[in-house]
Length: 403
Image 1 (cartoon, rainbow, N blue to C red):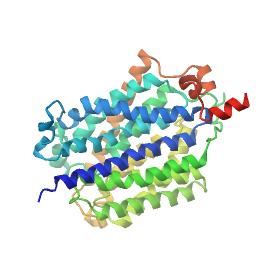
Image 2: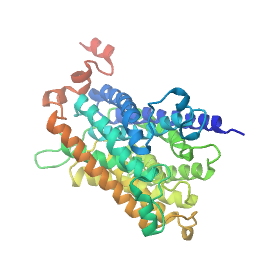
Image 3: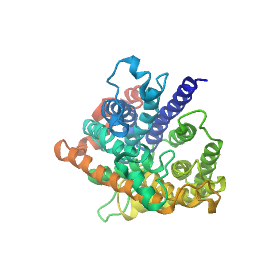
Image 4: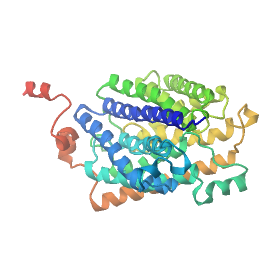
């Protein structure tokens, strides 16, 4: 029986679910930023997806997997000796992961970043930096996985991208937010953090819900084929999500922002080991991630004075790193997991991902800052990116009535 057609359908569904997650990224950001920056958040997330698609199609996919699409359709339909154009939908699925990188970063740099310089950074990240590490882990490029296996007993296990996607996105954002600097008015002259309130808690919550639902496509469909799909991945994703939100509820003292992001912290952390850890391990991984996010958010904002608006460094970066390492703890047979992992391989793989991301983020955003500038002028930032960049607000009819 030829299962390629069914696998194409399976992966198309997964790709569509992860594509829908980008609406979640958009509304999470729209709800968190001030009203004068809502339109800009929406436009940047969807156009970043467009720029990512072009960059990944022409360059990034080939960097990661050595496959390009410069061939007749008759050959494209049978790439890698798989029929029904499977490799093309596989590209679509992996593209939605790659495009999550700028969507993650967007939450950190919002409210003060220039539009076109940021678009250039997106292209560079998705064409080169992200697929460089993606290929190392998911395609065995440069012999990195073979080296880990030879020296530490196992390859680096990252089933759905705790480190490859989320850790990369979060720590790439670090360079961006540091080089951009804080929003005006975020810290006073004494360095004390000043409150900048979110514009819309229901939109923030909607964004979190959309991401939570789409995440089951992100994780379960990472199997790549219908035959490889695992109910364990679904259950572990569910329990990690719940662990994250409940832990963040307590640690964040009922704050709705922490609750809704806590669910995402748990999901970020479970990606790596979702196919090998025990469900109780998944609940624990998620709960720890929820607490890590709350503590990390306050540490980055208050202690380090880094204005990471949505907390993407702790949420995706730190919780992603925790997920990579946690797979090497809870994935072992001693902890009730399926085995096939070692703590040292997970630790070294995670540290490598963080190092590539931090270096890549500072390099790309540093280059763009030096050549084009990346920050809105003081006047434009005060006016808001909606009017400064797009010449329209989120409620134009209401604004006209007020004038």
